[in-house]
Structure formats: C-alpha cells, structure tokens
Length: 238
Ligand SMILES: NC(=O)c1ccc[n+]([C@@H]2O[C@H](COP(=O)([O-])OP(=O)(O)OC[C@H]3O[C@@H](n4cnc5c(N)ncnc54)[C@H](OP(=O)(O)O)[C@@H]3O)[C@@H](O)[C@H]2O)c1
Image 1: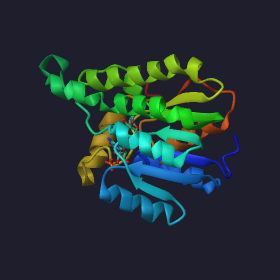
Image 2: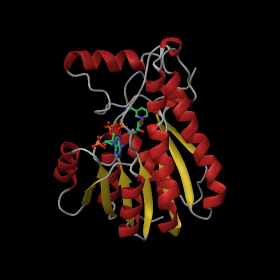
Image 3: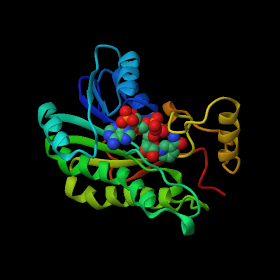
C-alpha cells in the first residue's frame, strides 16, 4: 500500500508508539486522524502533528462513541490501535488482585471494539494493525496478566483475519520500549530500562520510532496478514 493520500486512523495515537506511527504515516503523506482520552496527550499530539492532523477525544472502551466516530470518518484505509487501554497489572499472579488482572484486558476489549465496529468502514484493500508485546511469548514471573492479554491480542488477530480478507490485519509485538507507558523518571528510569532489557540480545530499550517502523511495514506490505511482527531487540531469545 502506498500510504500517500490514504486516510489513517490511529487510536491511542497521542503518545509513544501510536504517536510515532501517526508521525511516520503523516511524513509519507497519509491523512492522519489520532484519538485518545486525555487532554494532555491530545495537546501533545497537536504539538507533534500540527494542524494538518485531525485530533479527537475518544475512549476505545466507549462503544457508542466508537461507532459514531467510525461512521463520521468513514471510509478509511488504515486502522491502527496502539492504546494500552489504561491498566497494566504486574506482580506475582498467586497474590494478584483479580480486578487488576481483569482490568488489564481493557487493552483487548479496545482492540476487539476497534475491529468489530471499525472494520465495516475499511476500504476493501485496507488494513488494521494492533499491538501486543514480547511477554505474550516470553513468560516471566510477575507478568501473567500482560502475557495473557498479549496472547489474546495475537490470537484474536489470527482468528478474525480470515473473515476480514481481503482486508488485512496484523499485530506488532514490541519488546521493552522507552515510552511514557513507564512513568518512572530521571536516573531511576535509565536503571529500570537497563534492568528490563538486560536479558535481551540487544540489551537496550527500543524507541517508539523503531516499533512504528514495524507498524508501517505491516501497513505497506500488501502480502502480510494474520501475522505478528516482533520488534523486540531479541527479547524472545535465547
Ligand atoms: N512501551 C513498551 O515497552 C511496550 C511493550 C510492549 C507492548 N507495548 C504496547 O504498545 C502499545 C503502545 O504503548 P506505548 O508504550 O506507546 O504507551 P503510551 O505511550 O502510554 O501510549 C498509550 C496510548 O494509549 C492511549 N490510551 C490508553 N487507554 C486508552 C483508551 N481507553 N482509549 C483511548 N486511548 C487510550 C493513551 O492516551 P490517553 O491516556 O490520552 O487515552 C496513549 O495515547 C500498547 O498496546 C502497549 O501495551 C508497549
């Protein structure tokens, strides 16, 4: 797909990976529309993307608002959802608060809402990209909720790919990426990212732009569907 002139919706496109994907799409000439909930992130997206972008407040868990937004923006060619959904429960599963575990599935429900409510307005050669994460297939102590949700995202995309064809759907799976998803600041941040990537092959956190390049690959390559593309610095090995 040549994205120039195409209409691209990026849900969760106001921070981190989603914002980087929106910026890369815009740089290639796509008409970009980004959405999320918070005024601060919407303002940051306006600063980064400028007046050329359509920036709207939207919660991917609000199905009525999603339905109305998709109908208002239809038809479109590219649908990316990089939203975290809002909650990430970590820590030992056997001591985990089950509401926290369930809350982590907001990410999945946001993605399910996006495909169920958004696909009908996607052009016939259009495509969808969702975001999972290396814990889906690299299970480590304390990551049970994140791992389970990531698996669900990847399985969901494969499950719906046959019904969506010839429209395409793919997942990009990041490793540890230096984005605002991790709120820790200053020297503690560098230590956190170093510790989190010590057991990966490249021993550093990735950038939002590196993951966005994976999203652009999934969009631009017309022969890729039902796939998960790892952009994780070798997190799954050894
Ligand atoms: N960073 C990493 O190391 C890493 C690793 C593996 C996977 N991932 C995945 O990569 C994706 C992007 O993460 P990121 O690192 O770019 O995080 P981020 O910088 O925190 O950005 C998350 C984006 O999602 C939006 N969002 C969250 N809940 C939303 C909701 N209910 N409705 C609409 N928008 C919502 C946020 O905006 P508002 O708060 O304004 O709504 C923000 O724009 C997520 O799926 C995350 O799980 C990240």
